[in-house]
Image (spheres, rainbow, N blue to C red):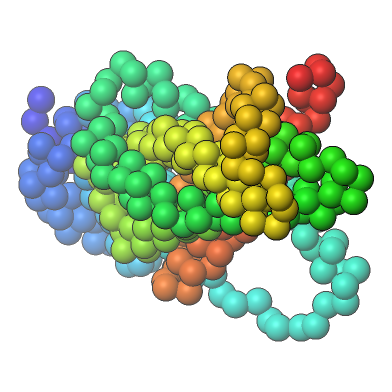
Length: 374
């Protein structure tokens, strides 16, 4: 079917009817008919655009029709889109007609603390709605990723695992090692006066394997890798690379979010497991350094407290912590509008919300395991 733009003139009113495929493969032909059609509308006051006869449209065709509407409005015409049975075309064109300029700054005025709390509380429903909407879009993208593997950038997965997992290993390992030292010293100072030093290895195992290991590792990953993901996608948003992906027919959620969340879900349990081992080394070093307990005795006591339940209770929550970090970081990145200041603001917000979400999810898991007696 050929690309065409039919024009029906009725006095000072005109009706534009694009027909044929307005997609990337026919972009040159579509641009020519749009340019010639715009020149034939001089003298018209009202222009109706009927999209019911479009054979096919993607981001490239939507950009052409959106620019046509913008040019007509700027020339004094009143444009109206008649979607008919093609609601998807209307949605695409409306998306590209959205204003992408920075919002006008609000007049600065001092708010008292109570007013500030009220403003923040009033923003909660909208932010929660956006969060649930983005989470739902990501969940809906998973069946499509399984059905159409080429819609996901699987080739970027090894590099993402390297950046998120392997590159974060030194700082995550150091943090867990020091936490193990702290738990060991705390156990010695609190249990030593009661002659219960034999319980220090068990204290290190339970505290770190069940709670502190996943929590510390997730916080380190949120501060390091989460910030990197948020700033990377935010930069792509402000430089219009996300819009370019949409115009080429790619879904940013499938192409960008799914591989990054998967990489986080794969690497965070491994980082946690390695951190648990290093925490045992830190507890061993701290305990043997300040007490007369031998290394052999510490290892035997640790082995007696190591159970599959303690290990699984900590590891089972790590994929959920990873998904929270990935969804928050990518969501803030995709929502970025503006310039460099917006990138920094979104990155900061992503890190803060990721850390808070990690702590909240970990607390919920702890409460659940306490209820079931695990």
